[in-house]
Image 1 (cartoon, rainbow, N blue to C red):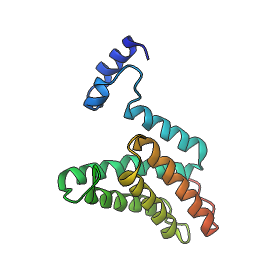
Image 2: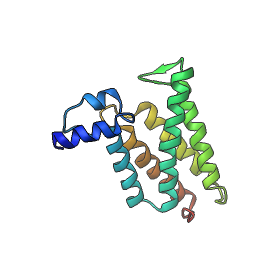
Image 3: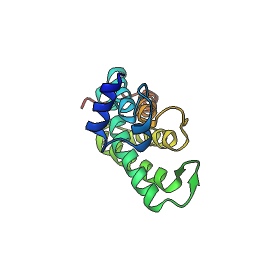
Image 4: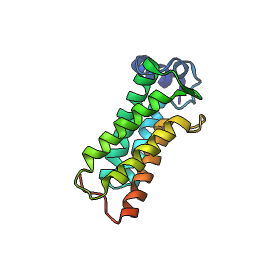
Length: 156
C-alpha cells in the first residue's frame, strides 16, 4: 500500500484500529483485512447457511469472548481466558441452534461448529489472525458435521 493511502486509511479508520495496527508499516495487513478475507472465502467456498453461521460465530462469538474474557477472565490459557472461550462457545452454540433448528440432529452439527470456533479462538496460531481462521475452520467443521449426519445444510 502507498504511504498516502495508508495515511488516509489510518485517519479514516483510526477509531476501529488497534494501536499496533496504526503503528505498523505500510505493507501490514490489519485485522479488518483478515476479516474481509475470511468472510469472502467463507461465502465463496461454503453453502450460504454455513457461511452465515460461521460469519456470525466470528462476529458475535469473538465479541462476547473479548467482553467476557477481559471483564471476568481469571483463568488464562496463553493470551486468552477460559471464561472468554466458554462465552464464545455458548454464543456460537446459541447462534447455530437458532439457525439450524429445523435440521434433525442439529445439536451435533452445532456442537461441532461451536467447539471448533471456540478452540480456534483459544488455541489458534498466533501468527495467523483469528478473523481469518475462525470463520474458515468453523465453516469446514459445520460442513463436515452436516455430511456426517447425512443432511444437506438448509437454505437460508
